[in-house]
Length: 60
Image (tube, rainbow, N blue to C red; front, side, top):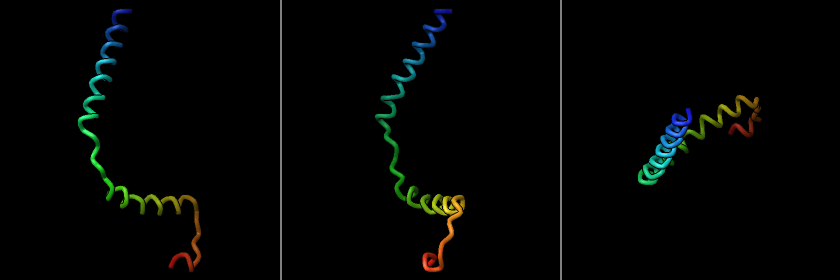
């Protein structure tokens, strides 16, 4: 039983050690435009969930 735990610990360590350099070599691509586009649906959904009522002046 101890041998299985030791093997699992080593395997977990190797997976973690291998994942860090792979992430460092391939940074995530910037998605600025996608983030800007997603603001509008999230804001609309938030207004509806909050039950916010806009006055006629605020709608313009």
